[in-house]
Length: 404
Image (cartoon, rainbow, N blue to C red):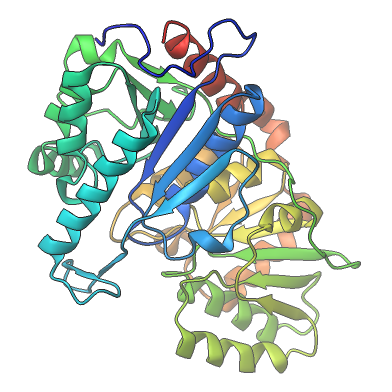
């Protein structure tokens, strides 16, 4: 789709590893998922090529609390907040949402013009937040020297809901027009997130399933010396109900073991968290809690089991560290987590605590935690064969960039 050939004088084809610049776009209006996925991709791509560098464009308000490997950096876009009625406002600048989007769009284009990437990887949103990527995608298309990839997680939403959303956003047209490849960060045998989308045969031929993105412990963190169950709602913004249920389980059954390590996530609101902290203190050490842990991989690695919500990154960690897990998926505003958890349970990878089927009661949670030691590990259901995502991404990226 794009002409070959690079435009920067420092792209030294004579080296065993040519220098390549990678830009990753992560709209991040809320939560941690997009940033953490982009960080994992950037780390793998730069680790493979010692002459490569990467910049992540992100709207995450907590991007600065993460460490990034050498040759990976980030540019923080002005943040936005989603209100209960579904509209957005600027987080800090006092601008209306149109002005904020315009500012973000200009910053994105300026960063790409100055950095001159060989490869642009866009996470999930083909047109960006409120279409903010479209001017840059058109500019890149005309210029023709940057390869563009759309990266999709394994599950997006119900097929009919997704098709309506993409039509409204112009996402289908953008995917057809601007992207050299589409990478799905999961196995096709588990789920096809594009089912129901009216993509052409030519575009579907550019879809590549990578497998899940394996995670490793990259930064050492203190972990308890005694056995523990890790409790994590991911970013935490919609995790209060799950945290409350786990605390009720430990409050109701004083013999429930092992102890729990609870990571609230950075977006669980202050007042709710303060109330939880009071309850944690009354459990006399049976539950310990931290607000945010950028090195959560170490806690996964040391856990006896996991109780979590069903976000993409958390699921990758469950598989990567081969942990027996109970997933309590959210069902609003999207069914993404429920679809992922239901399919994973069907494959024998995890157990799902489903509100309609099981009931969300303290006793149900007690029973699920007590049953964790008898669950199969994900590896017993073939999880190791699902985790080739980063290797496939590196190979795909190398092939795309071979002639730049």
